[in-house]
Amino acid sequence: MGSEEKELAAAMRTSASGLVPPTGLVAGGIARGRRMKLVRRLQVGASAAAVLAVAGTTVLAVSGGDKGGDRHVTGPAGIATEIPAPPTTTAPKPGPTLSAPTGLVPVLPPVLLQNLLQRVPQGLVRSGVTGSDQTVKTSAGILSAGASVSLVLDDSSGPTLFSVTVRQDAEKSDEDHCPPQDGSTKATCTDRKTGNGTRVVERQDWVYPASADTPANRADGKAGPSGRGPKDWSVRVERPDGVVVEIREIASREEKGAVSRETPIFQMDTLRGFALDPVWRVWIPPEINKIADSALPVFVRTSSSGAKYEPQPPVNAPSGPTGGGGTAVPPADPFAGTWSEHTRGTAPGSASPSTSTPGPGNGG
Image 1 (tube, rainbow, N blue to C red):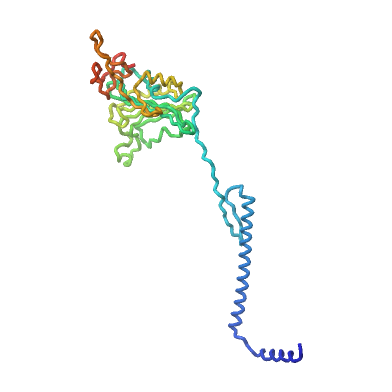
Image 2: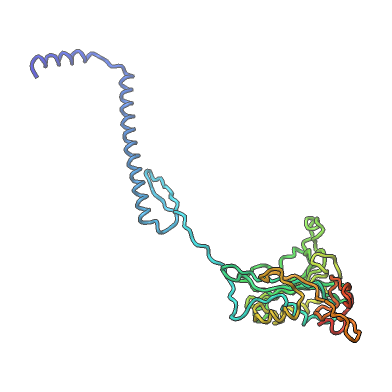
């Protein structure tokens, strides 16, 4: 620097030394500088945190994703970020199915009816037969197999609706067959097991079951400690092989019909004997179904698959007078003279429905 430049610089310093800058301007400049530095530091920190979070997520996705469950990533300042695991799709577990024993098929209603007629007393008027095929099949297999049959039995003291159900389900039920009576002493239910593991449930109740004596239960007139409607008695047998037999009787011509008698036609020990009889089977040879269907032509299949059975009146076409002048006799059928719900008097030579105990030969 030359002598002239040095003299100029000295003169400028001497002149400026006497100047006093405004206090607010200096303080504002210092504050703005500090804020700018803080902003730059925060921007740098946020960028670094974003880089770390992305890197950490990538590492977890590569190394820990196969363990399932939620994953946690710790970011700046100890903040935990929860990343939900991707949803997993699993195939629905197939339900259980039944395997038909080799050469056997599910029982049909005519077989149950035939077995029942061989066991009830012959001096009873029998009518109102209905049947139901309860076998359920799907593309996966057989879900349940069995059948049921019901009829009205009358001993001249009033009709009783009597039914038999024989069934086996692939999926076992955990139903409580003796529900709490909540203080009612008018109905009874026992649930026990025999020595061979057979479960026997016996119930004596009403069609509208007995329940606790409360205003709410009495409000509809169909509940309360004494029950309502006709008496409903049943014995349910669950065998160790999964076959369930239920014998039920109701003191009425219909399930929820008018009361026809004080108690059903059979006592509980008789019902128990019916239910424990080994004759009731779910799986039988197919020819047994055919024989019973031919011997007892009281059902008509209402679908091509045979899934539904309905009652039909006995065939009573008259044979016409014989050469010796004899009268036409109606063909024999298992309910001759006992089909009270069908009119048989219009056919020449046919008998009128019986309302009394049939004689020998009519109860077979």
